[in-house]
Image (cartoon, rainbow over the protein chains, first blue to last red):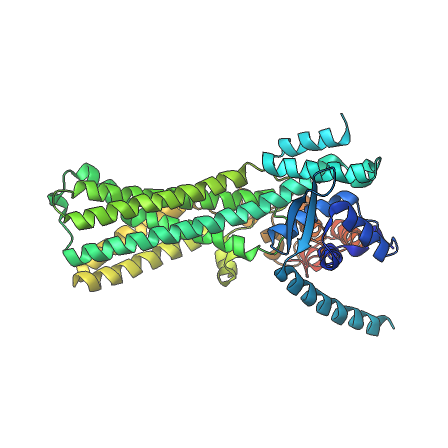
Length: 104
Length: 363
């Protein structure tokens, strides 16, 4: 798949990934790649500005974890983030149905 | 230097504050520790630092404009309370104060500065709200928002100072409860405005590098998008000054029960508005094009939207169009393939119609 295939959808993909279970940056990336069977080859660095942006928009919340040896920022979805995810899922389904209807 | 050290330097060079920088580095250090040797997949540290700085600058500029608007609303409320209560007591005459040297600056602060603050602060907040969905704003647009916000806050502080000077000038004439109320309100607004100024300071320290046009008042207020106004922005200044003058004349004629008094104050108001727009017009984005060529500003989106479609385009027009599609790509509006196709179409375009066709769903 083209590297820019998830262009514009990165925020939704992150929200969906974190919605299941709180995670740190590297774990989020791993889950994204596992779930997409490695289809999304995004530059790994782009994940962090997106995480910070989602937190600024109050869709994610984060805190330092004390569980591991290293300081680790753990992200979780806020209620507003879950609502945004539900809305984005609905929009994506409508969009994909429409594209499929055209492409056949 | 290793990847993380370069990132730290690049973040500092772009003005990312220490706390945010520390957090970014800790997160990426953890990422690298999870999979040693993955630095290449993280991408260019300079580009990553640029992304952080651009996004943070955009978010903070919008927030500073909104904070300033709230602080200015508090100032407006304080001024309204002060003037309404003064109206009930009765305005003291010019000659009943300590000195005209206090009276006139106080009058400018209480009556002219609020109008500058209202116009500039509203335009800053309007741009911030209108562009709230954009992940990254062009550096030129951030500079425009900062200028509008700074002018509005300075005028707001001028209003607070005007209230204090008025209190001082009439300290022996007006009741002490009004002096205390207005003096306290003036100080409170000063505090709110200084807090908003600090928020602006934090935003302007970040150095964004995103190319693109700043836009102008016609982008903020689509209702003004008449071609005869856009082609000559000074016409908007004249129209606004006339409107301000007529409104003031009508208000004062009614309040003072004197048409002559109303007309006199209306003329002063109109001239002050015209002067204000002439001095601050470029800074607040009423006029954006220093390079007016044949009545058509170049190197801006405006240049692409105005003018006859059959006009031949030049390199400046193509450059402006290319910035628009690159911004569209940065915002995720178009894919890499579409970007490539559109850039080719832009360079092949000979007329404005052909150029506009490449931007139809982006402007």
